[in-house]
Length: 77
Image (cartoon, rainbow, N blue to C red; front, side, top):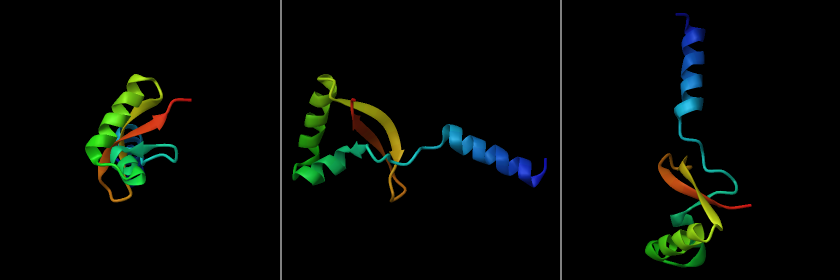
């Protein structure tokens, strides 16, 4: 295997299995809590209600600028 083949394989793996960055229209529970001056637990409750009502959807794990991952949400269009 050549070096260029190995690089291509690594890029393919990262694209297919890597955790994507947080999208522009996505937010985390912590971000919601901080933006609205709520506790994390209050934010969880609000987000769960919004998901149950169909206003939000869970989009899965996203990579934060810090390198950590978190569950992201976005408004349903």
